[in-house]
Structure formats: structure tokens, C-alpha cells
Image (cartoon, rainbow, N blue to C red; front, side, top):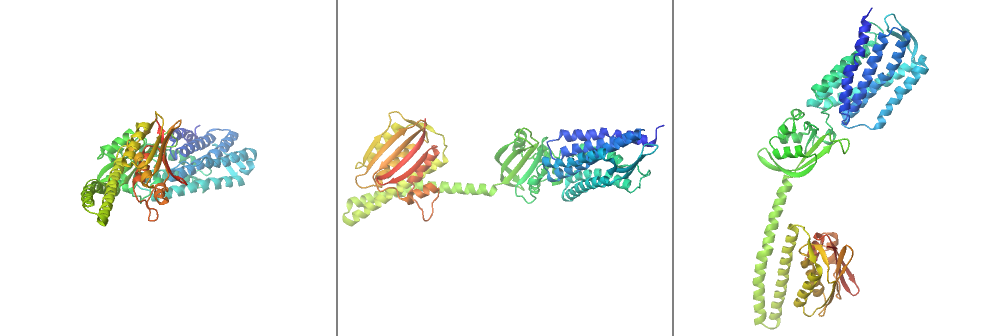
Length: 554
């Protein structure tokens, strides 16, 4: 005759179905936080319910006790899975593998159950309808303390998370809490002997009901699919707008700044598709749809005002081969953009002044100075020549400043240059400009390099500097030495050497009050060589100065 207890046992064995659904969902999402512990808990629920159901169905007392012994292992598996689920869910990240060392306890417990059963049950009787009536031993209370500690700790973590969450996240947490409270309450009723049939453990029946609650949460609220995988990186006060998408391009999480930017409340944004959230900004939709990683600038109109953002899209996943979603960060750079535009305008104004106004004015001053020098004598003639010399210096600085601007704003495309021919041209020009200088050249017949198109200006400046900062009969030696992968040009003179104050700003990359370069010629040389992918060094020796420029061989 089939009893009510037998029906209950069959129903508990049937818990394998909802528990199997839970396990499958956890395994399918195993790369996400909370999924693996969820699957572990599902295995524990299936084992606990089916083992207890089997103990009620079988007629042999020995088999009933055997099933009850196996049940202890799955009892612990449920509470361990529940605790690890809470840890990963609240932290939004996978726990370290060492946490699974908790399973050492149920393994030890199984050894005790089978080798020293009197420590678990001092006495056990199976009644006529198959219900086990035990008198518990000391180890039972050790195991109960272990299970209840993990169960209460997990419940505490979920309750705390519920109080601090909102939107669908809050609903998901509520589902987990309700699903856990059902078997928790059933177990208390059983221990307090408040069940209709004393000694009949209704805890597995509570798990059977909670399995249905968890399954409902899986498919109604996407319990494991919409776990906010990057929320811990999003601070509520962040000025950057941050959005996390899952692998289906649905919003898993947003911070308040992103919600304000896109005009959608946080609780409504979660679960929306990216196309819906970013619908007013097609360029942003394209970036999110077409790539898992991007870095660019984008313009967005916020409250009628156009603002500029640095857009960073990066993949989120457990490994390099698995992409769980995307982390989108929008950093407001409107103020920086406006500042750049102001600086660009200032650069254009200064450049125009240097290239046109100053140059034109200096030309006028030079013309008057030449006329004065030609028509006067003595001290007045000397003053006019000084004016003419300084005017030429100012005009030279203007030309160099214009060249620096051209180098800085132009493309850094390198060209192939016949260095031997170029050096001959530069030496000839300097000789013509300074006929008193003794300039010698030593270079291979064929020597090609990869360099910036303004290399000629750099070489001419170095040679002119060697001549100008010298005595009345300067001696300059220019040489080119070709190596396996590079070519080095050296310019040697017999002058007093470049002052340390001239070289320090080049080495440190800045001008200071104590270290101020008097001209921009050396700056120009260093800039052109740097843009050529080369290197320039300045060395002062006892016999003069050596400037070495190393370039890549073509």
C-alpha cells in the first residue's frame, strides 16, 4: 500500500528535474560570478532531496540509514554552495579556488558517518512507514553548527546587498533570499518538532519549493545572466559615465552619471538593449555593436549643450578568449577640448605675429639700419650696425620658430635622403655665408638615411652654430660614418664649447629660470632629429665641441 510518506519520497526524488534546470543554468553561465556556486548548490539540493526521498521509499531499515548517511554530504554541499554564491554575488567577482577547501569538512564528516556512526547517531530506529527516528550524537551538532554558520553568513550577505541595491538587482536579490528562507524555515519547524508528523524532516520539501523559486528567477529576472560583472569598479560619485553590457548587448549596470547623461533612470536602464539606451547617438551604437574594444572621441548633446567625451570600450570576461560583455566609460573632456581650441587659436595668432608682423617690422628696421650705417660714421655707424645685427637675429628666430611650428604640426612621415649630397649642399651654403671659416667634409660617396624632410635645416643649424660660437678663424670638421643599421654625422669645432646652460634644457626637456637657453636653434635641431627617429648628443672637450647626430640607415 502506498502511503503519504511514499508519495512524499517520490516527489523528493523528482526534485532532480528543477535542480537539474538550476545546474544547467549555472553551468551555461559558468564564466560569470555566482554561476558555479549556484550549480554546486543545485547539485547539493538534488542530492539532499533525492537521498532523503529514497530513505522514505525503501522498506529496508539498513538502506534507510545508508541513504541518510549520504544525505549528510549533500546537506553540507548545499550550505557551502549557498555561502560561495553569496560571496561571488555580492563581490561581483569569482572567488579564489581556495574557498572550495570548505569541502574538506563534508569529506571528513563522511569518514565519521561510516567509521564511527555512534558519534552521529547514538541510536536510530526506523518506524513502520520508513521514517528514521534518531538520537543524535556529538558529531551531529558539530555538523549542524558548520551548516548553520555558512547558511546564516550567506543570508546576511544577501540581506545587506538587498538594502544597498535597486532596480532589477534588488529584485534578483529578493528572489535569492525568498528561495533560501523557505527551506530555512522548514528546517526550524523540523528541529522544533512543529511539523504534522514529528521526526519527518520537511527541509527537503522546502528545497523542492525553493528550486521552483530559483528557476522562476532564472527565466523571469535573468538571475545569472544580468549579474553586474563590473559594478565594484563603478563608484556612485564618479564623474565618468560608466555602462556595463552583457554578451547580448543588454545593460547590466549603469552609474548615476551615465543615467543622467542618457536621460534614463538607473532602475529602468538595467535590462535595456544598448541600441535603446544609446538610440539618440548612432555613432555610439556603432562603436558598441562593431567592436569589443575601442578608444575614440565622441560628441554628445546634453541638455541642449554639445559636450565632448573620450569613449573607452573594453571587453569584460574571465579570460582572453571569453568575452562576457563590454565596459563602456565616457569621460567628459569638454573643458579640455575648449582649452585645446583656445591654445590652438593662440598658436595661430602668435605664429602669424612671428611669421608676418615681426618679420615685416624687422625688415623695415633693418632697412633703416643699413641706410644709417651707410650715411654715418663713428659711434653712430657702430650703433646702426648693432641694430642691423640684432634685427638679423630676430629675423632668424622668427624663421626658426616658423620651422618649429611646421615640424610640430606636420606629419612625421620619414623620407629617404641622400645624406652625402645633403651634407655637401649644407657645407657649401655655410662656406658662402662665412668665407673666413675653414670647413672640411669627410663622407662616403653613397650614404642614404631615413629622416624628417627638415633634416637639412637641422644640419645647417649645427654647422652655423659651430662657426658663430668661435673665434675669427673657426675650424669645423664635418664627417659621416656609416654603420650596419645607422649613420652618424659628427660636427667638430675648435671653439670654447656650448655652455652647459644651453644644453641642460635640451636634456631635461624644459626651460627654467636657472637653466635658460638663449636661442632656439638647438631646440630646432633636437626636435627634427627626434622626429626623424634619431638621437643627438652634445659633448664639450678640451679642443672644442662635438655634436653627433645618429640616424637610421635607409
